[in-house]
Length: 241
Image (tube, rainbow, N blue to C red; front, side):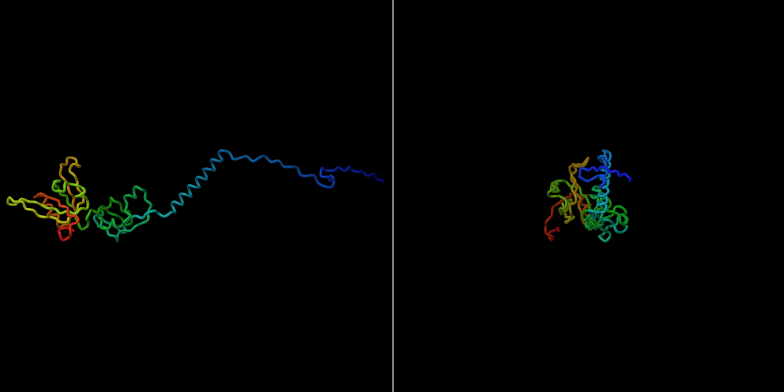
């Protein structure tokens, strides 16, 4: 008869025999995860900043222009007078230095004269046009006047936009003769001779007058003594508008 061998029975801490259950798997020990280094942090920050910059640039480029400015819609030659039909407002983004030289109001250009050729679509700037005071109905002329005959040159009495009458005094046959040469001139500018190099004490008064008054005014300035009278506010039937 064969002999049998009895294996000793041992108990695990949980009370189960080692013959009835497998041993637990060994515990895996992993190395601790390291934090990113300084270079990696800086690199990530630069990438994020670049992405923000690209997004900001895109949104700025995609945004609508913040202003509209006058351009000519047809070719214009030097000396041509602009009309509203030849102008249009176009949305544009302009730097501050260019913005102050452009026109955002078409009424300011209606009737202005082109000083240089302008191509259709070209932005109109202050150096491209001229719109003298009173134009196109009036021309401008300057007169040299003694301050005593021009309200003392007081800017509160003889300022820009004031309406004046020009009176000439001649000596004829030994007697003074006086005539009103222009009764509805507009003061454009008063230049004090003392403000000019080598200038005297007189005034130069720039006036906007009707074309018919140009020759009589020039003749009065050459042959007589010119006086300026302020007629702003005088009723139309009394010699001024």
